[in-house]
Amino acid sequence: MARVTTEDCTTSIPNRFQLVIYACNRARDLSSGSQAEVSIDNDKNTVIALREIAEKKIDLVKTWDSIVVSSQRYQPVEDTDIDDNETVPMNENASQVSFDNFEKENASEKKRKKIYMTQNEIQKLISQKKNNDQEDDQTDNPEVGLEKQED
Image (tube, rainbow, N blue to C red; front, top):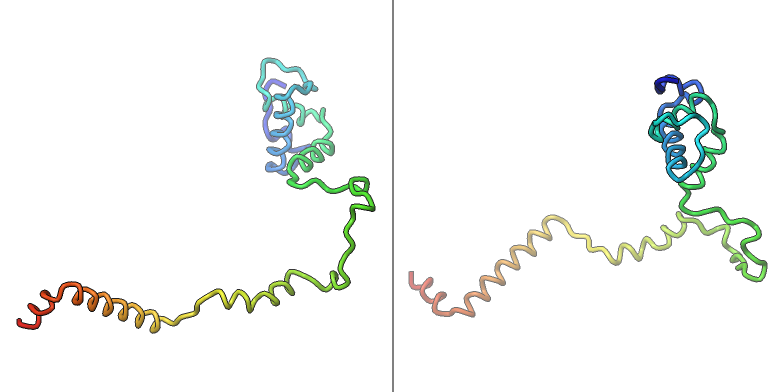
């Protein structure tokens, strides 16, 4: 192929977004040292990856599996990973515990931690704070208070 386009690859992978994912993964494999299935012809790894997809030289199922495995944050546990003596028995009511039940049980605790106030109550607190600050200023400077009263 002289020039590869995405239209050449859509016969193998009709979704262009998936095509990008496949091509990126294959280009990374080529960068890490994998052998190219087509002639390199002084092309970059992304072009080589697209040419391999267009010519159906790579196994898309294996590529997809490697994409999934590399994207997984937590690897699934196999049966042989945990010994029977390391297992923890389930509680009797473990099947009844769910996230919803947990939220309902802890809702009252959450309410205790929050302070609920109306807008009027907030305004009253602000005005009380201002009055207290003014009174503190007058007690700190009694001469200023006397001057204001004389005027």
